[in-house]
Amino acid sequence: MPLILLKTRKDDVPKEQLFEDGKQAVLKALHYFDIFYYPLTRTEIKKFLCLNTDEVSLSAWLASLEAERRIFFFNGFYSIQNNSLLSTRRIRGNAAAEKLLRKGIKIGRFLYQFPFVRAVGISGSLSKNFADEKSDMDFFIITKANRLWIARTLMHLFKKFTFITGCQHYFCMNYYIDELALPLEDKNIFSAIEIKTLLPVCGTAVMNDFFNSNQWADTYLPACSFRKPAASDRGKPWLKNAVEWLLNKRIGDSVEGFFMQLTQKRWRKKEAEGKRNNKGQMMGLISGKHFARSNPGNLQEKVLTAYEERMDTLLQARPEKPVAISFAK
Image (cartoon, rainbow, N blue to C red):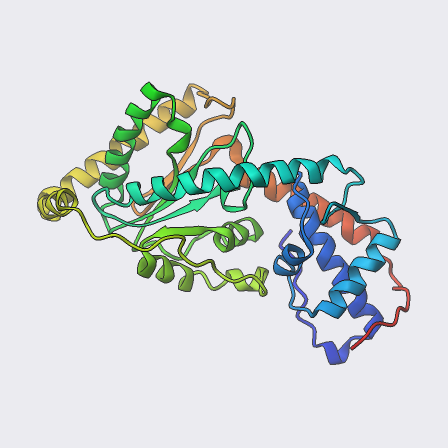
């Protein structure tokens, strides 16, 4: 079930109905993040709504939902669960993420030095300012057109050495696209939130091209802006330039095709053998000539299924005749 967006003209809808629509929008945002046990601040709720609103209306919606005990407020955070431990968990996770982000930005700038890498961003839970003892550093990589598989192979060869020092969880390069695949094919609430929370580290121009190519995310999150780079770009080191010069020629096309076929073959074998990662999740790789992303435990599919089930429940619980409530214009 796709996300239901509010496209009706406000002039054509009774105020009571608009009020209920606003409350539903708040619940949708809170329900999505509750899948991850993550309560939201008032500012975050406004940012992740599926509609634009003002502070007065938002206050009225929150107050009404609190009075109905459909949402709860603890330590500055709203949740659909009457559980103060969620806010405690979030505060602890935010503090841990603040420390990890500084390291993540340094690592992202290091990854930007690899041949054919054109942009690096921090994704996953860390981009949402949360970390715990099980958190990885997830990176989103954009490469030069038709050189994704060379870049990915070189970066993952380096990652093999990180297992020696036990810091492999700092180098989770989970999502690659090249410059010919900037518009994402998956257009849904999961992808929209991932794009809007993506933290650019390096490659400002290319990252801006990526954001411009995915303006569809505004349909889901009209009040949420794309994020600004966390650091200034660095120049290309001589080794990166040298490797790119060598592999930009015809030999590079052959190497690119070889690495793609080799990697896809290895991942098909892993999936057939039911291999799992260190978190016990089934390993999988969704890939093509211009993109590659790991799919541990079918995360996106599971989140969207859970969200759709929650939205079905919300629609069923929605009152047919909204209670008339006056609120400021």
